[in-house]
Length: 465
Length: 94
Image (cartoon, rainbow over all chains, first blue to last red; front, side, top):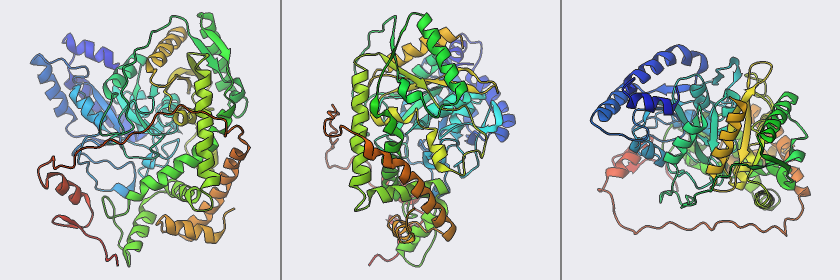
């Protein structure tokens, strides 16, 4: 059942939030032990649903009244645990609501639980969770993608009606692609980051997962908007004139290497369908796009290493005692951070250290500006840009854990949107020979999410997915 | 490959207690990643790029107490693993 369907059925009195949540909880009981999508299912979920039903009975009609959602474990809900799937935050209870949570509460949504993720959102498979990997509902020997793998898997398996994730380099779109659902990374500044645990602050965005484009759009409209509590949040009032035929750019030179042949074939097939439907497909050149991943793997760890300095065993979470204050810090962090988090902190510390700063961090920031300017130029010619979401479909659990660089290459098509700050959406695009979902990704200019949703609807209608 | 001294120095700067095996793995991984990102040296046209970037502005509020005294701070202090009434406990600093 989609969010839109659930709302209609509740309005007609054909079902209740309580009934929907009862069904979900029953399914969670059998499926979650296999998938490990939820880290915690809230014991008051049913109670929240009953309250929503009472509100509806008394005549209230809110845009998400009684809709059960799943929330990534790095987004704060007041009074509930939030661990970012790390041992570092053991016992931590959020003392305030993230702005997105406040907005969802005001819209009447209810929360089923918090979902598994790569520790502090660092990873592309949810295998870096301190609480074990999330499995892909399409094949439980495979990963759900990451870092928001729990949210994507919970939605794909029917264990919630919608979900929130965060996307720093593809962490919403890639798991959406692997699990076969819709995932949106909004424009940088479109959704308040207040109350999401910061990983790389110039790249992070919170975004929604939906079973359909309509559900994703509905969630986005509710969580977006200016917020004084996030200084990078932007005021937007632009409404976009929707065109009936789109000009769609394809960065051919970026698709030449490292893409699985089946992924590429599916992508070509979709382009053909879009062309037949009357949209114009043009080749576009973004010469700096090839530097995206290298640029990302300097800027992201640099920002992460500074953001994660706050986890010191003093302010919150775990604490390990040493001989002195320095040892308290080092022991707490050494014992409670996982391998990938340590790797990125070390890398970030390296690229920011005296003598290396200009050569690495300074260079990466300059190249990032090149990438931004490439996008700006191309968006003068086309409405949207299209690419596959990931170079492969879901891989096996354990397949890429030994070589971090291999894992990083999974992000090749997703990081450009974060570097340029533009919005991008991943859509299910059929399945491969093993029955695993493909993902297709559209990029639009800053704050033109409406154009993305239009392109997404066009593509879903043409594909009959 | 990064030298052992560099790894020790970085771990020190990052306040990370690492065992020998972790140091060896991280040295190897960092070496590979730094080799990969070297390609940024080839990027051209950095001096010509013009980016119409939005200007980040400070969001300031008046310096005034807007919450009931202690209401927020007690929540935050209680989140600290070691605390005593309204204080966060740490080891001797000086």
